[in-house]
Length: 120
Image (cartoon, rainbow, N blue to C red; front, side):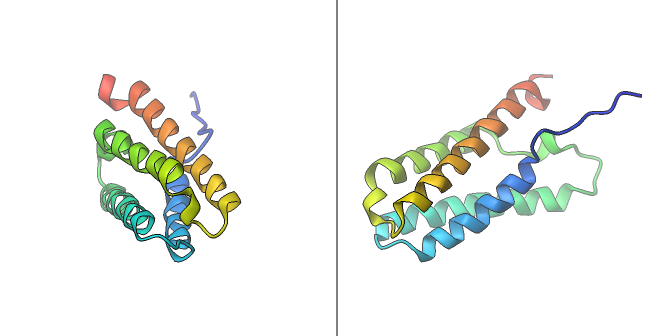
């Protein structure tokens, strides 16, 4: 029997990203940045709820995961925060760390979608 080992757990990464997004909202001075972070949080929270709901069903992780359009939109929001709203964060170093985690999450899920369910 062949065992498959996960290098990274996308659900755990998304959970960390949700917590960090909420923390970042509390540390943000500009309303435009807060709006974008709330939108990011809402999208991630909705997807986390969907994954929890279908976790015990016969559906696989790939079948209920985010679509590419949502990921592209999340990435756009992330980039806009980085480019236009960097000055609105109390700790730029902490925001940069969040930005790296977010980019890693998006790239990981896009790679999973590319090699997973959608292309079969």
